[in-house]
Amino acid sequence: MIDFEFLGSTLFKLMGALPTTLGLFFASLALGLCLSLGVVALRVNRRPWLSYPARGYIALFRGTPLLVQMFLIYYGLGQFPEVRQSFAWVVLRSPYACAVLSLALCTAGYTAEIIRGGLLSVPQGQIEAGLAIGLSRWQLLRRIIAPITLRQALPAYSTEAILLVKSTALASLVTVWDVTGVAQQIIQRSYRTLEVFACAAAIYLVLNFLVVRAVAWLEHRLAVPTRPLESDAPAQAAAPLPTDP
Image 1 (cartoon, rainbow, N blue to C red):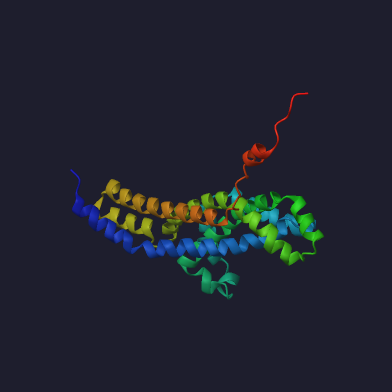
Image 2 (cartoon, helix red, strand yellow; image 1 turned 30 degrees about the vertical axis):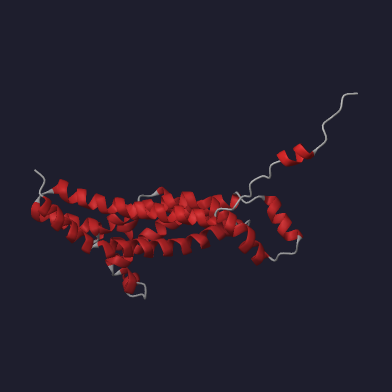
């Protein structure tokens, strides 16, 4: 029999940890996007001494598990005295900051490749046309390259954002009490795994639904309006009919 009272109290407790999960998501999403812009700028550079480090960064963070990266940042860096005595220790000694940093570094590797794919989809003819009419490099980027890249990369980036929402659950393994962390605490006290994780799954499902709808709205706003083709019927009706010889 379903215990609605327990489900309600569990859902209420998990909602109390929702701000932590949202903070992890938005902070890592913003930081990862900023990092990815720098990585993709190096990645598309023709100079090998700039592009190869970016390729190595992408290969590293796409080729290793996020959980391993998070453990290395949280547990591994603190073992070095140089790190503990540096200014970076102000950030790295915080579990929350380590979780945000690891999530941002990981998503930046994926986002950089998504943006690069959008850049490659920009028609070369439009770039040449922009240069021909005298647009500067900044105007070319703002008016032609960036809008096309954003429209092409947005569907894939929405998938990365959804994966990032789900990846925030790993932060509980470094003592960040987000929705998953609080769910594990409740399970340790009640031993009711199914009901607790069902409530947590419902919260993540709603969050991902909101992300999907937000991206769909943004895609609609960025869509290029197309004009309907004018019908040739009136012109054809006005044209004289051919006469037999």
